[in-house]
Amino acid sequence: MRIILIGPPGAGKGTQCQKLVNLLRVPHLSTGEMLRAAVKAGTPEGVEATAYMEQGRLVPDALILGMVTRRLEAADCRAGCLLDGFPRTLPQAATLDDLLERRAMSVDGVIELAVPRDELIRRMLARKRADDNPEIFSKRITSFEEQTAPLLDYYQRQGKLASIDGLGTADEIFSRVREALRRFARAQGRRAHRPSPLPDV
Ligand code: ADP
Image (cartoon, rainbow, N blue to C red; front, top):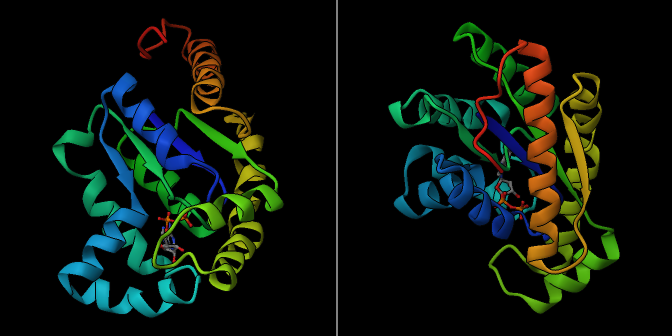
């Protein structure tokens, strides 16, 4: 099964992704982590991405799509994966749909972790990361609102979106995530007229 987790920076995607991969036993594809590894290794993609990341801007779609396509084609992703931080723009989402469709696959469900902006800022001030200075951080939130939030509509129209409240303890939020998975499983069963391939969650 293929699940996408969408949320603004600081929404707690990392924590929920860890819990999700433990439950679903699928590879965790985080484009932020792939990019940070590429930057550290000094690959051409890493070099190209650095300036964008430092400024809190999204890196170009072509770069991300090349990276993700290679990863999605790996054998361990055949049975599914958890996409974290991707897609982040409408062209990325449309390309992902095409890519999966050509392989007779699809996105099974999209979970939005909704957290208000002032809470995101409060959390950011309480943690530390190189691209976490307040000015850059608010640029990343703005990138999210302008470029990524339209994806919510895109997936809503496909009947695949579950928006959940991102406030509360990690465990409280994860029980909402599990509830969303159960909804996806039911919807998928209805679409396919067969038992869902999702594990018992
Ligand atoms: P966060 O979700 O906390 O903003 P990520 O670790 O997902 O952080 O991403 C860090 C940075 O990497 C982003 O600010 C952006 O510059 C870049 N990035 C990650 N994923 C993508 C993507 N799918 N498209 C474009 N840029 C991306």
